[in-house]
Amino acid sequence: MNGNTDGSDKDTLRAQPNGSACGVSPSRLPPEFYDAFLSTAAKERKPCPIRGLFPLESTPGLISLLAGKPNATTFPFTSLSFTARSPIDDSPEAISLTETEFAEALQYGATDGLGQLRNWIVGLQEFSHDRKHDGGWKVSIGTGSQDLIYKAVAATVNQGDPVLVESPVYAGVLPIFQGHNCELVAVETDSCGIQSSSLRSILENWPVNKPRPKILYTVPYGCNPTGMTATLERRKEVLRLAREYNILILEDDPYYYLYYGDGPRYPSYFALELEEPEVGRVLRFDSLSKILSAGLRIGFASGPEPLIQAIDRHTTSLNLQTSTFTQMVAYKLLDAWGYDGFKIHTEKVSAFHRGKRDIFERVMNKHLSGLAQWSSPEAGMFFWFKLILSEGDKVAEDGDSEAIIRTKAFDRGVLALPGTVFMPDGRKTAYVRAAFSLSTEPEVEEALRRLRQVILEARAE
Ligand code: PMP
Image (cartoon, rainbow, N blue to C red):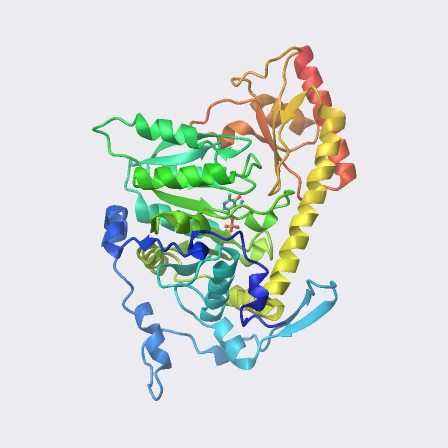
């Protein structure tokens, strides 16, 4: 299979058609629009005088005395080849780097990522999200999506700014916002994902003299921790509100390819915004962590150029770039697969997680019915369940799973997370997050049997 497509294999990846396909062309928000969204630090950050000149090094006939690049002939590595399972039949396929590729992998590279991988990703975004690469958006590769989310927050918020975050929220972003002293404004969620009605009510009732939040952070597929996926209606309404109240959406979507629901996938915000009258409010984050390898540490941001450039400027002062080595490995694999192979592989990964979800839920029904409440996830790798801590309990919101999970369950040899760590305000909750991606059926059986005992004992106290 060939990663350079003529479009035919990419077509099979196409999400549901959207506005652009219907011939309605939204206007693109101009670069100056983002001035009001960039933080003071991002505006003051200067581009790196050296890295910006890297592309000139390939000028024919030019002798570059520019960068402090080490001479690769002194490096001990001599070649790289690896074996990967074919997405089609799982047979082992050998993949080798050419001499030139290997030399590139060992050297410093572009701030926004290895060119070949970036181009591959642009193609993936075009056809996963049915969004042409028309100059209105750019891609930047980061050291996992976490790296890019951090930089995007730093690029947009000033100390003390209010920010909209879904609640519960991915615990990994809380320290980022807290580090900027942000006021975390919690948008409620339920089994249909983020509640647009909650968002509307927050924005409608926002104090007149108080600066409004500029960004909304949300995980639309298989949310971490709730496992829930935002419905199409909710997504559309959130986009409408973003336009009405002038907000950027940070769409953190590492579980997009881990969707295993019965119906077709909903379009991403990145795709759906093409149905809006104006386009450029969505900064999307993807990750290779859940589909190729978390250890590669590769994620990518796609969105308006001024925001991507602000992220890249931060990279030049923070970590220069993402590892060229792992980017080259990822590129060689993806290029060998092509988009068809990628689609087959990600479908297998999502089917795997669906199987794990089914096992976990079957065992939950066996051991925890009447003792916990949950909604079945359709994407991702988490169950979010509420403990029923007393008989006839109406499952009060103010229940607390902390002591039970952190101490009692742990003492019995079960490690899970109490819901409080995902609450923007740290409030107590009866919820628990359990990851189901790793455990075997006997392990799930034993873990939930132990948890049942712990809950029963807590109820008897
Ligand atoms: N966002 C969410 C919602 C996540 O669950 C994770 C991983 N736990 C990340 C971002 C970070 O992923 P990456 O490995 O790409 O940095």
